[in-house]
Length: 296
Image 1 (cartoon, helix red, strand yellow):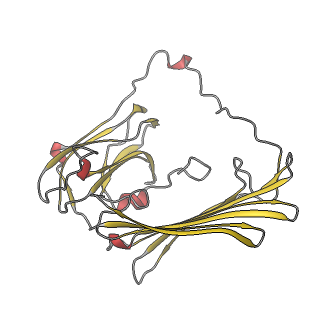
Image 2: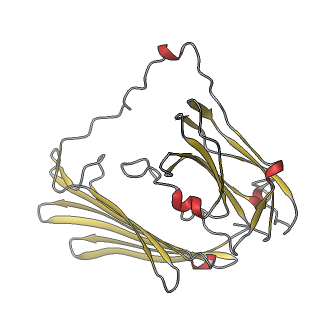
Image 3: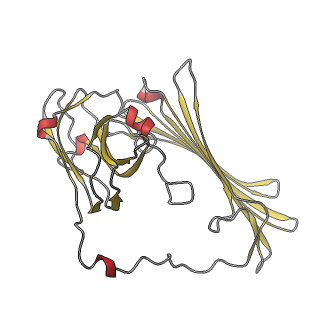
């Protein structure tokens, strides 16, 4: 997510269904948090490489839930990011997982939900093998950075709108568009998550013309993420991006395509770059890289 329109987390119920979840009782009063919640876990896993993901959500009376913050930990990095160590399957480990800093107010009548999982596609690349994680609830806990109400709260000044340089004079030629689709193959179980967008690179405006230099600008992007719940090595990420500039009969475009897959030991990265002036191809490059996973 880049924080743009439509980029906020959606209803978490589908992710919750694939997670181990813990709900609080409905809140009797407003609860504010400010800072980084921390999840302390005592756990075991059955593979030498594994992730643990924690999501803190607010649950509404109708059952829908909204993600408030989250955190991810590669358990091979439990002691050091510089010197990762494989896990010993079945061994009991104690870890602390800080979530992202957040300022949030939970409303009365709502519930807090903590969801734990070993995957978070496409934010995290899946571990090489399916992982079973067991959490020992009696030895685990959630720390909340509670902000108690203060007598000075009524005097606090509301945040003003974000400041930025004004956009140049610009005429939108067609509206910006952005949409997401999720397709499921019932035969293979493959899930394809696609995000497509078209814009002009200026705020929420679509492709358009810069008046000062009489230049038409456009930008399209397509991100496609494929996965199968029974096979982490089937994960695939594809991104296609194109920028176009046009003035009268002159035009140029730059297009890139990248894909990422993985084996049990390496990431496989492929890329393609093409630049055109009009219909003429003026530069082209293709490359492939193989990158060791090193416990990822």
